[in-house]
Length: 127
Image 1 (cartoon, rainbow, N blue to C red):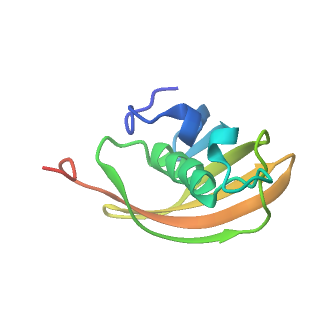
Image 2 (image 1 turned 60 degrees about the horizontal axis):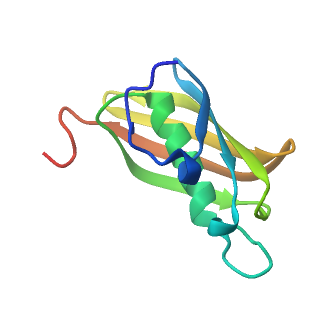
């Protein structure tokens, strides 16, 4: 499992890669109290989105991949202490544009789904 992008991601916040293959990935995120949006333990959706985004980036797995757009749905809440798994798969490629579908589940129940539009640039986005 060689990851060529997003090498400095904090895996405690965005998830830990379980597998990276040609055009697909699995990322596991163990949610913590630091991710709570309220005193009832609701995980802020940004952490779920972050795990999904990270899974999409490593499914493309190019050093200069960036997110251009996303169309997402939050389907069910996630509580602190729960573990979610993001599954990403490249669905279509046209030149430098990649469409990646991502599903996030907890205990085999889908909590998030999205389509991420990614671009592979010639150089780093900050150059």
